[in-house]
Image 1 (tube, rainbow, N blue to C red):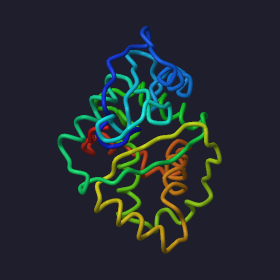
Image 2: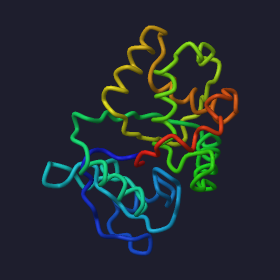
Image 3: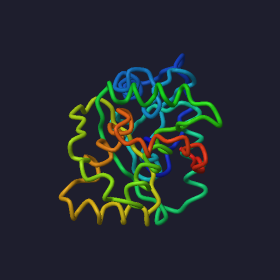
Length: 204
């Protein structure tokens, strides 16, 4: 999920874009939600609120749709910062579109995930449960840096994941991208098995 901590909402829609800095935010994210890519019900959200010293500059803004913003608020209200760690990574437009296509076509009770966050958290969990199954992870690389994605991960899960990757000399960013590409290519059949629907779907 793409955001930082407690965004300050700026009541605007795609039909009402005031100020140069907010206009630049829309341009930077190509008039679509920074997390899921939709162009419906989007608005500028401040990363650092004004009362916390935030500035009205485009680098302090992110474009979110209503669903992603509500999901962010849910995480904020249900978890304290100490419970969560934010994983940031960039992916190619092709890989992002492949992920988004699967999410868009997701139906309850069918294999798949309803958010990028749920997919990433699931893949991290599978890696931590049995690292040996992913000995070829480094072969699945995505070199693109077209789209930035932020995902909240439980702190304990994050730390276990990082400890295993440190031993292999991989970064969290490269490992997450490789896991996603492996998943999209269907190169890890046990990950893509019909058992996926039984995994509890976490908030995005």
